[in-house]
Image (tube, rainbow, N blue to C red; front, side, top):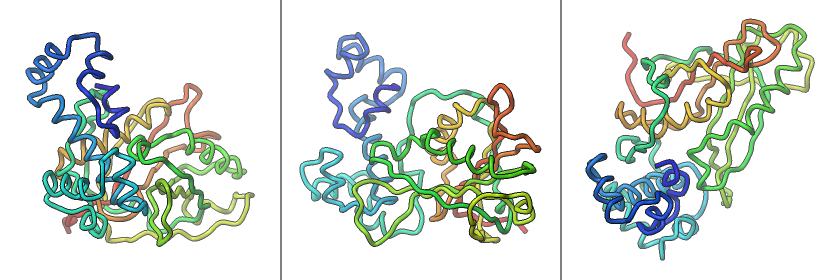
Length: 286
């Protein structure tokens, strides 16, 4: 299942999957259907489309290039597949201000049971932040992998600029769209703290980062080693948003790292305390 997930951007063949598993394709297809309730070819096709829909929504790549990247023979074929499975064209998904995760078929890959903490709908944890902007590029097949390696260096460099370490550090992250056609997905990443914590900051110039006070967020919690943060975020996007039938609205996710004055993000064993906020379409209860 993990191999399928890592290669889902490709039109996977049953023979290739069977070869990787060590079983005959007839046995593999029968057991896969018995265990999961879905045909393996259908599952691969739906996971490929789920990733393609995210690339359509969160990149400025031309649709014809996206079709080629996912090995569809034309943009017209991509349009037909989207209409068949989502009842929306790629153009409609791109123009919508929300992404309905319920229509994206979730992964059947197993995740750590500890990731299944209760989820709450809430507002942003802070109203204003001050911080530094960064960006990096991802290839289309990397979009839903949420690599932590690019982020950790930015955490460490930002935190090192404080003579008195803040109790919390916030990181805003998400794909960025512009009128410029890019051959990949541009991710913004802002390391920041509340304005009052900037008194001990000694680094380069920062900018004010206002947050929308009435926005609604789904709040997920993580406690564990920082190397598992990537799997935790993948679990949110590949399983939890679908299961909760949530629509993600345009905007950046918020990572809230609880440091309690430590000089680094994790403790001596590398464990971190993280609250992760995803902007969603919902009505907050007054």
